[in-house]
Amino acid sequence: MRVPLLKPRPIRLSDHRDDLAAHEASGQFSNFGPINTAFETRLRDEMFGGEGACLTACNATVALLLAVKEAVYFGRRRGRYALVPSFTFAATAHAAAWCGLTPLLYDIEPETWLPSGEAERRLLDRHGDEVAVIVTYATFGNCLDLGAYADLAARTGVGVVVDAAASLGARDAGGHGFGRGAPMSVVYSMHATKTFATSEGAVIYSADRERIARLRQMENFGFDSARAAQMPGLNAKLAEVPALQALRKLDEIDAVVRRRGELYALYRSLLPDFTFQRQTGSHAVHQFVPALLPEGAGVDRACFVQRMKEKGVGLGTYFSPHLAEQPYFKDISVMDELPVTARIAPRIVALPLYDTMEHAELRYVCDSARACLR
Ligand SMILES: *Cc1c(COP(=O)(O)O)cnc(C)c1O
Image 1: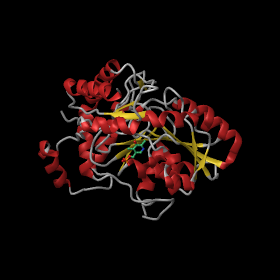
Image 2: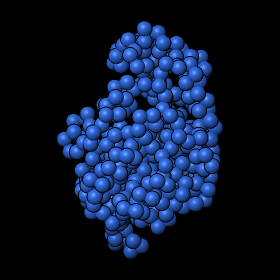
Image 3: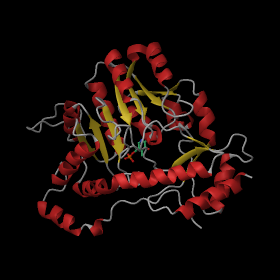
């Protein structure tokens, strides 16, 4: 049996020929056309209870860059550091670096793998105004305490941006989309490999509509209505065709999240010796299934991944190497102590997950995993 790590499943445009014909007839191909507007409005209403505003973007990396720039340019802090967890995808730190900031890499919590609140407070105490922004990460779609970040931002004036790349579709305990009510920028990816799969695309949500209005202007060269730049800008707009993929994905996202949640639960029950992330929300969005190899496993991680590959099972090792181990970030960043990251990263594997995964495929992965540990 062959089980790949992921099977991206954006909606099939060929199933939506009428929508495509209407799009072509509209004559508007980008620049926040009718499909983008329809998607932003529906997403705000269905995922975020009608509160705040949504803004599409071409991808989450550029959206993060803009969100960091917005937080710093319009914020109260002019410091040189961006706090970034070391246990995240490269894009989180790239966004800060493109804004001219020095990433200050910090640790995560041992069970939720979320960025360490203790480290954030300690680094803010130590570096004061030198910290311009915290670019935190909702690790693997797990829910952050956004209220605590809002309090921290209000109390200290530090900017906060949330990388929620894997989280679009996650719902909190109240049944609302993760992020609802957050006054800062929360950035979600709609890349083909995410659960909310399109081709390329992203969403920035904030409960602060003025922030979203500024970001919309920044995405369009910083122009005002007279096409005069009023602020830093670039072109980060989402074209209408990927917005159509997003609009139709929204129709099915709750069912997709439910299905993946069931598969995730089955993994946990079939692999009791592995360590899974402690979930902090009610409906997490699972892009894949991150798990730690059993402590004292008889094989090292590279060997385990190789043996699984020989059995036809594709694994990932996100996020290992973590940022502090990657040459570019090693070169441009400052490192805090990273004991938890250093313990977790070498043991982590990403197990396969996709919308159409059959139970037989999942059982094959788990049987293979147990065999490959021996
Ligand atoms: C996927 C991902 C991104 C980048 O998203 P793109 O839309 O592909 O640019 C950023 N941060 C994290 C944590 C991700 O997983």
